[in-house]
Amino acid sequence: MNHLDPAAERDAEPAETGRLREALAAAAYDVTPSRVPLAAVERRGRMIRRRRRTTVLGAGCAVLLAPLAFVTLHGPDDGGRVTHPAATVSASPTPSVSPTVSAPTPRIVDPGERVTAAPGFVLWLTEEGKHWTTPDVPEGQFRSVVDGNIDRTRPGVSLQTDAMSDGVVLASGVYYGGEGTPSAVEVASKDGPVRGKLLELPGRPGWGVWYAVAHSGVETPVTVRDTEGRVYATFP
Image (cartoon, rainbow, N blue to C red; front, side):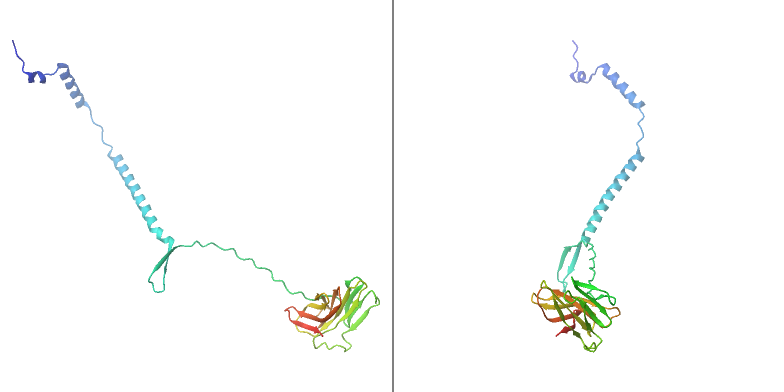
């Protein structure tokens, strides 16, 4: 009876397995490995490095620019510093310029030009003086500025009153001799001050006529002021 060594029995392999191993080995020798794409690998590596450098530079710029958004204030002794965010300066609109309102001046009328101050009350000026009519005196009245009754070299104002049937009082007069340009007239009344109007001939003759309509008794004083608000002349 023949006895087999157990170790030899374990090392033995089927014949088919051996033939398969030999066939695989032969096939492996016939395979030619492909070339490694070194150029593509290098390009890929350079691209990755550039991206990393760009990211690092961007972060560095952000760090450098961040302090510029702050302003450092130093105290008189430079002992301490206080940092505040920089203020944003916005452009302010240019303020509009309001037009200057000039003071009124006398109305310039031609010699003989009629001015209706109220129904039935008409005024006109000539080189000789003031003319006017009222419902009670339709033929007209006259006050001269050349007969010597007034001194036109000194400031002065005259006053005439005419009462209407409905209680309205027409006050008028001549002003003359003041400095500056006449602008406004005011006469006192029982209801308070009443503003009037001024008439003059062309060429600044140095005199003019004022008139006002009041609904109560007229009283003094009568004050003419110039364009600067100063007293041109007053009565009494």
